[in-house]
Length: 302
Image (cartoon, rainbow, N blue to C red; front, side, top):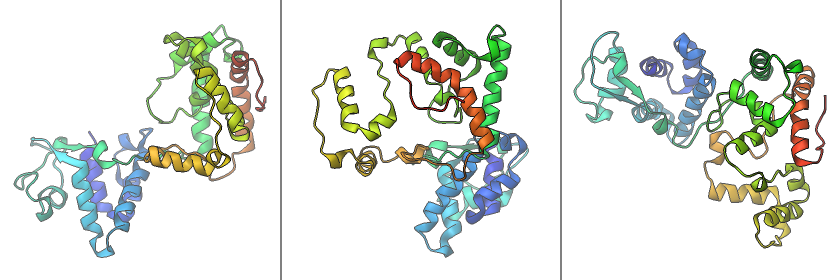
């Protein structure tokens, strides 16, 4: 519903200021959407990629070509209309080659956005204000627990089933990666939701990533044994981080374009107060995971 406004913002801002321009002129309903910061940043990334391959004199042609990949028209007239210069630049100019028909007034409702065409090679997820984002999710989960489970002491689930109840009541689980940073680390809750979905507990293996890094051969032997496969003696060179990254790049070339990182890190240190509050929040959930695995991991307890 905001496609026409986004289109006008991008044309006005130009290819070098696309992200900033979107943040400055996008409608309020879009500015407050959870995915807007990621969307605005990803637009800038896409345009920079294309501009690197073209001379500076062709930058606005690059912008126009990309916009024609991203936006399309349905039939429809009526107010409010897309500014004539915007419609002419994107849909009816010489380079559009008649793909959108003859020049005409374009209603805002007729402009549609195709995210798949725009971000064919994926987008990168960005956190924004770390303290604000993580505290917001933490407070939301705690508030929901207080409302939904008033019988819980300190709004904390005391069993794996209760943790799964918390997720079902308080988290609208999304596919892919889109915020929900704390939910992704509530491992016991997710494991118990798997059981509810019909997964046999005997088919679940919980492996500490620290062991996979420090003792990769031993960890892979555990995986082979659980899967009923013969063990394989890997060469040392096959078990390095560099080898892993090369293999992922070869088999999954879009892996890091979709927000995942093999070695992600914060751009600034996490505030100690936030780190302490997160450790306190996660402590009871970690205890549920330790109860599942039968072993304690070296994670902060408070």
